Amino acid sequence: MIASPKESRSFAHKTFLSIFAWLSVLAALAPERALSDSYPSRPITILVPSAPGGPTDALTRVIAEHVREVLGQPIVVENQGVAGGTVAVGRVAHAPPDGYTLSIGQWGNFVINQAVYPLQYDLLKDFSPIALIASNPQIIVARKDFPAQNLKELIAWLKDHPGQATQGTAGAGSPAHVGGVYFQQVTGTKFRFVPYRGAGPAMLDLLGGRIDLLFDQASNSLAHLRSGKIKAFAVTASARLPGAPEIPTVDEAGLPGFYVSVWHGIWAPKGTPTPIIAKLDAAVVSALNDPVVKKQLALLGQQIPPREQQSPEALAKFQRAEAEKWWPIIKAANIKAE
Image 1 (cartoon, rainbow, N blue to C red):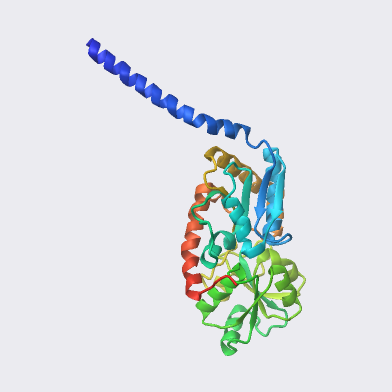
Image 2: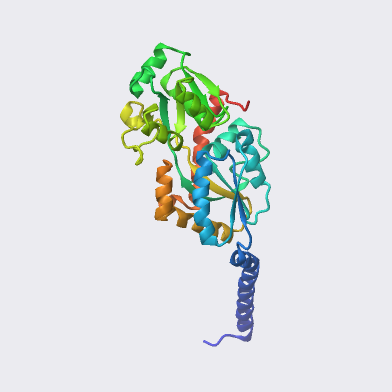
């Protein structure tokens, strides 16, 4: 059947509109593609919301070195640990969304702080997730001469001596503090919190016997455990640490399901173009699959997530789930910034 002139004109018009629509889409995407193709063209700054020498700083420098090689630009690591890292994270929230200012942060910085501090930004809405990097379960540790020899004995001792034991923290709302509060809620025990300026000073007092307990990141405790200067009761995860297989999990030690993980991720300011996020994620994924990086992170007690959990979408989903879990616990304990 031969189309009429009217039908031919209609078909041509529809075809023109379709082509025009596609050209419009391509034109809109062109600036993003051009930006992605030229990115990065200068140094990238990664803000670390903690002091130099801590677990987050150590992890950042391991990752940054490999990312530098992949992207071909210097990576500047800048530490700013005041106010629980809220200042550093806030700088990233308000930075231009061009991929040149990023934040590596942990569970405390990107979940807990919103329930503890009066922030001028939203941790779930004002950032573009890039990748989940690693998790570092807490280890429940004590001074080496503490009376209890295992987790069940610890819980029993704390119940028999309410309010007598002391636990070091890195301040109100820090992962160590929240872990300790959660432990009290689950076990029905009571002990006193002693705030420090960080995990390092708290560990020094534990080594000196001036405090009794720490809910510490594995990377901060392993060296002291290996030297026999402190004792461990359990790791707050479902699997034993590859770097310390002798430490039982909380499931094995008598407190099933008591999982506390100080995980780390990397974020960019909200609105960072998708192609740039994809390029950064690819660089981080490359780092996490590098044998040298894997070995370095294992020595730090860090556990790399499966590949499917290393995407921006997976980090966003995981961060929101963590907020839904921990914000009610923090609110119930009335934890506020000091």
